[in-house]
Amino acid sequence: MNLVDLQTPCLLLDKTRMLANIRKLQDHLKAFEITLRPHVKTAKCPEIVNCMFDSPPGPVTVSTLQEAEQFIKAGYRDILYAVGIAPDKMERIVSLGRTGVDLSVILDNIESAHAVARISQKYNHRVPVLIEIDSDGHRAGIKDDDPFLIELGKVLHEGGTELRGVMTHAGSAYQHPGQVALRAMAEQERLAVVSAAERLRGSGLPCPVVSVGSTPTATFVEDLSGVTEVRAGVYVFNDLIIAGLGVCEVDEIAISVLATVIGHQHEKGWILVDAGWMAMSRDRGTAIQQVDQGYGLVCNETGEAYDDLIMIDANQEHGILALRSGSRASTPELPVGTRVRILPNHACATASQFDSYCVLDECNHIQEQWDRFSGW
Image (cartoon, rainbow, N blue to C red; front, side, top):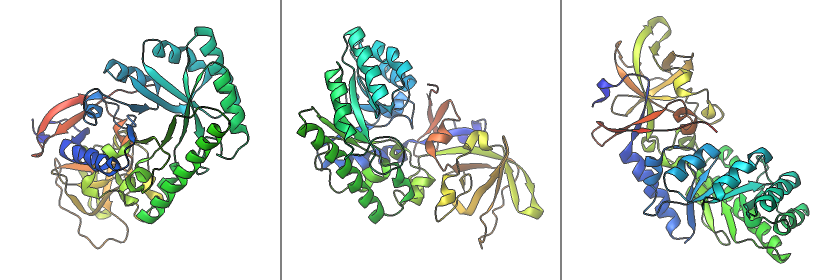
């Protein structure tokens, strides 16, 4: 099939770019002799994640139990569920763990620790647990120097769970563009989680796993002393937010939305397409960056970006394309029926709007279709 055969909007995946992105991070991390544990929430597709591994597959990181279940079916057996565990999910966690899958959870509070301990004792199943460390004040976790860390570790270790280690996610890295800033964030991330691990061990508690990760920090990290594994997810696709941070180039973004021109408002300089926010998502993550890409950057059918042509606005099923404010470029002639490809701000959010990937080969032919799943 060719692009002209597809109904729009649809999600395209440039397999050549994707494989290059995978190799790029793998090559960077080889020198550190640590484990790369990809985050599969971005792809939600076994065919894509299989490209990241030799046989046997794994380990992986998930953000939903639906992801865990789907990747267990695909043969993955070492899985970190990297969202603070809700007590009502523990029965499901234990059920999966008792099938022989190494499924670990994270937490940062005493209530969750007691809940995991109770379920471990009830089923005589030592649920593996990592304590989440707050390395940047971005989201969840406890500080590495918090006295409560040791108490929490003891509740887990003495309560019948398996205290697996510590983990952190420097999510604020997405607000620090440029290599210098991201290298500093990577070191801040490392220092916090290694310090927490040392405190636990100094109190006689086990801490075999020390886990860090985000695509920006993993890309520019220079020192991983004391770290055992790195997690990253969006690197497999890249997106405009990642490009705006200086982590990748625009021509390294592997996914796009194929859309069709359906009309014009010439007096306004608008081109209308059949992909609105239901296709691109509502994510406007580049709005806080130096270059605001609107709802997405517009490319021609072969994936080459037009000068300053972006989706400036979006309704549910209508996208409005126009030159970015202040541009001196000329609006391209795009007659009704023309196909365009729109690069997303946030690959995870845009991909989640679709139920499959149309996989392109190096000649922009549709090689195959890969299903993706959703849900929790």
